[in-house]
Image (cartoon, rainbow over all chains, first blue to last red; front, side):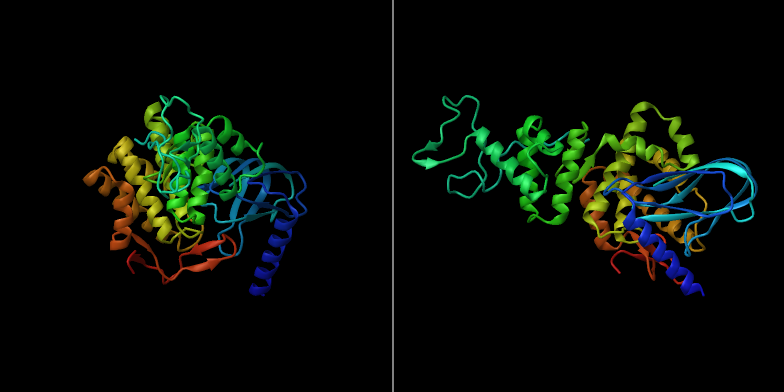
Amino acid sequence: MKNFKLFLYVLISIILFTCCSKKDTAKLKITDFSKTQTVVLQPYKFFPYTMINIKVKGYVNDTIKIIQGPDLYDINLSGDLDTIRKIEYYGEGPRTFIFDPYKATQGELEIEFQL
Amino acid sequence: MPQGTRCNRAPAGDGGGGNGGSLPPPSSGDPDPNHDSIDGTDIMTAPIMRLNTIGKLQDLLELGRFDSPKMEWLRKSASADQIFDLYNFIREEQESEEAKAFGKEAIDAFMNGGEVDIKARLINNPNLHDFLKNRMSPNELALFENLSIIQKTAYLRAAAEAYTYAEIFYPQPVRNRKGDAVKHTLWNALSTNYIGASLTKQLTDAHEEIPYDYPNHYKETNMDLFNNSKGRELATQYGNFIFQLIEEALENGDLRYLSNLEWSQTTNSWLATNSSQLISTDA
């Protein structure tokens, strides 16, 4: 099951990566908490990447998750939010993030991802 | 501090004349700067030599059309020193991919008013400074905001130079490997030279203060802190010739990197495992 999840994650990453243009930032505006949303970020060559910034602003009525992938911890957030999470990153390659409403059903969020 | 390129020499072995060596550019006192022969031997005059070298850089670095931004800069704004020194560097490095990547990044830096020390392989592209600032940890940023403008620029310069050097000259991805060791050592050594060891330690320690992403992340932090410390030590002891000293330290095993890494599809890099340990760089 774990292998299947990993396979699915890699497959989604590849499909999204190949279909989307090169970008190292993305913004999500979330008002619909019934579905997940995925972003794929692509670094530019030799840019001095040191951290990924994930800026989250807004409110949610329960816990949401930002899923980084099978090897890394999920980011769990809830309530009134105005925060920046920093993640170590050195331009190694594309990165995929999945917004998962998890337990939240209502709210309004803006999430900005910056490699 | 390095200030742009230094030498004033023509491309090695490409000036014609049949001697295969470097030619000095024709002096401004030359009665006929556009002459094309001395004693019956053809040589290139300065404008032709310049154009010829730009053409070679265009091919080597795949700079695109004649009117691409980099080509425009080479044709219209670059000094003879910048053109010839870049070309000579790439030739001396046997036209390696690393040398070509360095050449491209150097042109980018020059275009943005930055500085390039070819001998030390350092590129300072001021265009990247805001980008770096935006990616500091919260505590690092708080300390940074209290620095003087000169200190701020110098700290960012050290980061940009170290990053570009490691990414160009070491196998990618560098994370947790020897290139990462060099990056952190060079970053702290350069920063120590620019703003002192004490401030450098405070800032670079604070840089590591972010939440861990996975169970063995702390091992990465230990590696970074060790190599940061080595960089400050080298700069404090010796001051100059940082690039050579760090390469020497790497070969002598004075720096540290992580063993038993595991490839991560999530991060596209090698991550620490339960059995990862800090090992010396001669291992």
